Amino acid sequence: MPWNRPAEGGQGNGEPVRLPYADRAEAGRVLAERLVPLFARDADVRDAIVLALPRGGVPVGHEIARRLGAPLDVLVTRKIGYPPQPELGVGAIAEGGEPVFDRDLLDQLGLTEDDLADTVAAERAELERRVWAYRAGRPLADPAGRPVIVVDDGLATGGTARAALRALRERGPSRLVLAVPVGAAETVRAMDAEADEVVVPAAPWEFRAVGQWYRDFDQLTDRDVLTWLERAAEPAVGGPGPGR
Image (tube, rainbow, N blue to C red; front, side):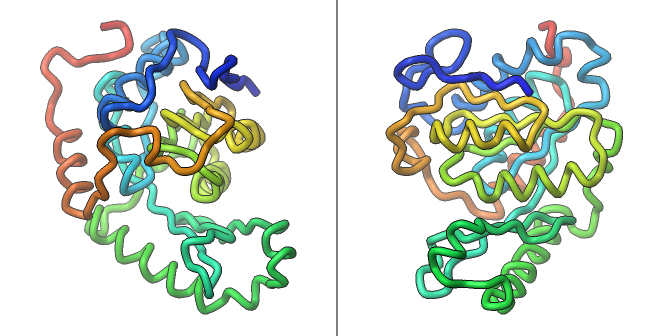
């Protein structure tokens, strides 16, 4: 599986990336240009769908969808946190999929999946709430037989991206691409086993958090997600497409 391996200093293939990005929209435009060669023929992009992981992946995905002339939707994921320290992710779940756990971390913490049953149930409930908030009962577009581009604003541990990719793989896309503006180098390398292509313009080895690679990294709300989705649904003048 091709992997856009970062060069010395954490830059990906193609033109050098200037970090930090101004915001998620700029990161999405940079990422979109890296994706254009993968979808150079109209046939490649005609049936493609961009699935952004909310909330932060949505403005990134908006720029990609606009550049490729592809539809944008969300694939909702939730981190499964370690109960005494919820910010520590021990797994993740994506809509339509089963929980994906970090087995090594579970062993280190002396946990089993059964120990996390209540946490998983709570995250499933929040996932379902967000699915309804973002799509109001509309089903996710069927990825079967279609190229799918999964987008987020960054990869730290990669737990939610991994859960999303595995849930989608079960639904039979013709091609599964993971596209992220920046990610921890080791995590990016590990994603090679989960997608057909992994496109990451910058993958620094010294990586503390996704937010350090953005000047503007405001927390987004459900309303923000809906606004980006509404913008993506508006007809594009002239149709951007990969060849324009």
